[in-house]
Image 1: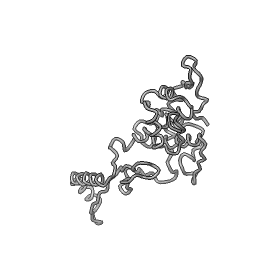
Image 2: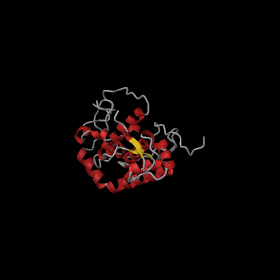
Image 3: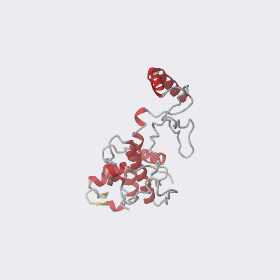
Image 4: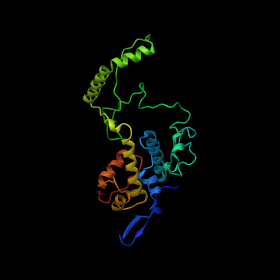
Length: 248
């Protein structure tokens, strides 16, 4: 599998340590920094993370099978898991669905699918699942024509948003966490990919923490304990290894 490994490092006499031997920015961007994702495209970020997270889990020895390999992404793609997600052209990646053959639904925008998270800590995750939506109750006549319904929505839009804000405050009062607006679409996938990039350098290439930071470059983690804590939290399927500083 073309995946970051110990083959990607070499001994540096000047530094007297192992360093990343791969200097091709294209390879680093595809496998470590994931910088060639289509800008602003949440689905491209999401599919990149799913693809690459599964690749690393397989690389670390986990046996992963799909019940629907002909439909379930990325198992139906012939180049998975051998090739990096970003080694494929954007036009090709756009054709890949999370479940091939299903109707295309934008779950973030579907008004009939709730995403209210939890107001309790989920066992195994160690945190609450944040909400990306709030409930809104409306009373509509089944006999209104579509044009009238659209017009009523337009006229009462301020009132609707007042109720949305009240619902948000009520959920927060009940202990729910609400994703900040800027985190709903892209940031959670960008953050997870950042964790994965550091993990690959540290625990797949097996660089020291100092070399992991230097090889990752801008936006790197400053603290190894913070990195390890976040990996356990956000990449729970990956073995994190033992921190030499941790007590036995």
